[in-house]
Image (cartoon, rainbow, N blue to C red; front, side, top):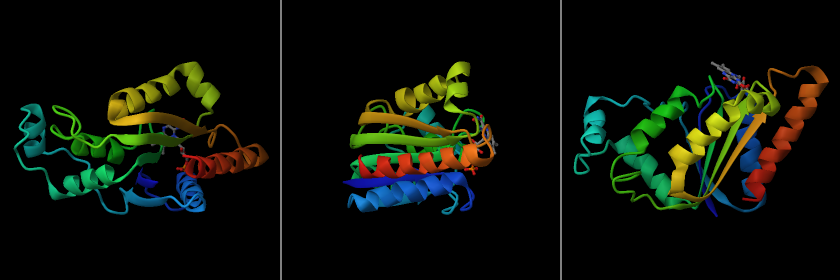
Length: 194
Ligand SMILES: Cc1cc2nc3c(=O)[nH]c(=O)nc-3n(C[C@H](O)[C@H](O)[C@H](O)COP(=O)(O)O)c2cc1C
């Protein structure tokens, strides 16, 4: 299968980057091909400007869509599977990725009418400082899952999966080393068994 990854983290030294690498290793092992939109590396502009806002606000499907947005839409249309990999920042994705949705989910592509090629699957893998147990207890996990899968992905993908690899700040020492290792195995397996 052909997988398009939308990745948002500024540091190649981060745990989230290690998750990206593990996921891509899994894809490689299963002989899936992939492309990556590395939003920081490509200096993706996350700001919905006035002209784009007016296009959305007034449902002006005929108004032009910026080239960088068309390029992202083409990558999604070409892929069977979409993967989103990012750290949880303030119980959401980084602003860079939020802005990607603001700009790439245009009227006439994502909605009114929805013309995007439906993906076979969308998989969301995010890293978090809190443990998954804590995020579930506070309701943050459910909130993030709802926003990503029910609103942003919606029926634009046939199957949807939301995974949080948590604990990077709640755990320390050997406990985190063990957890980190297990998370990287999970990320690789998710790439291997799409
Ligand atoms: C600005 C900022 C906001 C964060 N907000 C949250 C949060 O709301 N919930 C959470 O569990 N972790 C939060 N974290 C922790 C990150 O999710 C965690 O550091 C990351 O997933 C893994 O580290 P990495 O940056 O090495 O990839 C936050 C981190 C930063 C820098």
